[in-house]
Amino acid sequence: MKKNLVALAITTAFAAPAAFADVEVGPFALYGTLTTAVEFLDVSANGAVLANTAVSQTRLADQTSKLGFKIKHDLGSGLFALAQIESRLFLGNNGTSTDNRAEIGSRNTFAGLSSASFGTVRLGRYDNAYKLSSKLMGPLRDNMNDASDDNGDKQILNRLGARQGDIVAYESPKWGGVTVLASYNMGKDSAAAPATELMPQLSAAIAYKAGPFSVGVGTTSLNNAAWKLDASSSAKPENLAGGKELRAWQIGAGYTFGEYKIGIVSERTNSSRSGAASFDQVQTTTGLVGAYKSGPLSAELRYAMADDVTGTTNGTEVTKDTGATQIGIAMGYQLHKNVQLIGSYTRLDNAKNASYTSASNFSLAKGVDMNQLALGLAVSF
Image (cartoon, rainbow, N blue to C red; front, side, top):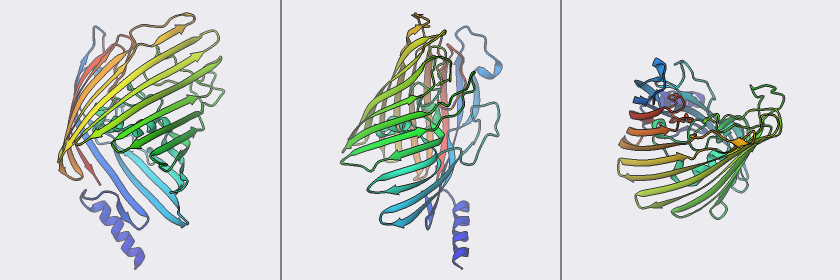
């Protein structure tokens, strides 16, 4: 009888309208968000000849829809066993040439142990500590939709922050307002020749929160990897020949006052390679965000800027015009505690040797600018 009741409850959770957050049946919980938007894209080629698929268009673009299942078993003495399967869903275009990309467990999917005294260890697919460090700094990653987001491997901010499939991650308890994160990604073979070494990534972060104020620092480094920053705006660690070094750090802070939030982050990425095709390059990026929420109304203003890459390639000055700026405004209106209308406008200006884009992943060639208007709906449970 008990098994039948559990089965009925799970079935009801799937069939019910989106009126709950974390639908729970004993240690099992179901959660998710379905979000999509009509995007109106106006691309400025700046004299470049573009393919028909790369010019201005209107599309229905998914805004990171997901479905998740999680388990939490009480092992006694304050120790818990954790398991989670989170999968990406697509309501509309997924930023690639195919519309059938979705995988079970493609998002944060792990097994772990948690203790209020010692913290949480997760094994599996999870966000590295460098990505999560920006979440500890305040409202910097609280974007309303992908169309307004400036964080990610193809975006201006946090390009070496990533969800990685072979990771060991640690999250400390809060010690007097201090939180510590650490992660180690075991690495994978590079697609670039000679591809003889793994490229493991170590990340760490520390943050402090006191009332409305938060501040944090994150750092990451990759072994056996280098990334020629002026050749690719997107994150591109490669296992190149010769001596290699690739690391990044960021520092940021946030403050909440009444219905308002503000946040700022500064990030620096360094990469070098010795040998026949040597380089030593640095790039600095900056992000600002302001947010407002009152009753059902939410608003957010974001600004991100990438400076030109500086340094040398084979002893000579690097390629110029590798920076970009992105500015966006997003607004949301809560129709229900789990149903929100969202609208956003984003303007992205690439210098002639830069190809950044927003997180909804409309591919832009070097030097191409974009105006992006998105009108969408988010339903969660």
